[in-house]
Image (cartoon, rainbow, N blue to C red; front, side):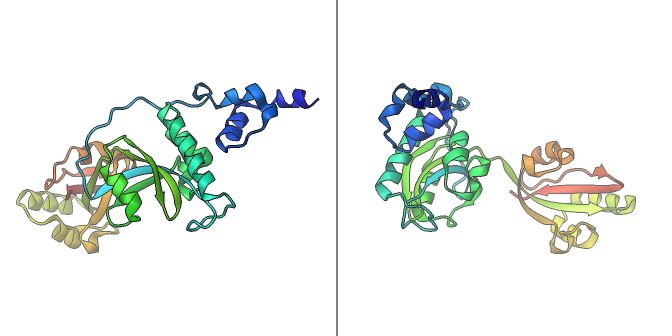
Length: 247
């Protein structure tokens, strides 16, 4: 009866049992569920040097232990270290990082595959930050210890632009803004004077955007800009939008 029950245990559960370091002899051959062939594979990507030394896009997998900052677990530090090393081995064997982070990370970002988003230098604990900013793009760290626990970190590709936005609601304003941009007038001054958008009074400065952050109507025009240049007017819903790239 017991063996009949065990035969119905999924490979996924067997993998969990293995990676939590539980040794149950009766599982026997079911520990084959830990084989990476049964788990989602990562895409094959190449590593390349990062150009930005102040901003990085990252994901991580965190395993905590009793006594670590914000931890809610009875796991010992040694067991946490072992467990993190096992997940690292799985990643090195080709298992998808985001899958493992979503399943097993003990961080609120686990639901997004461990995605932390954009990390600015000076905002994270030093041990984490030093490793992250030393990584090539797409590279994966070893096991990194911080006060929060044990991390595995991946530095992801980052394509972003820093924008000024001017939104106008009349043909007259559109023509004036276009002409004055052509003359080299500071777009922040034009935003304050003419923009009807919510950021106009502060000079139209929007901050940083990735492609997925922008309306699809604007993406191609915005990402074709070089630093210090502005788009032509982009029409939408009887308004016209100008974007100028700061960074």
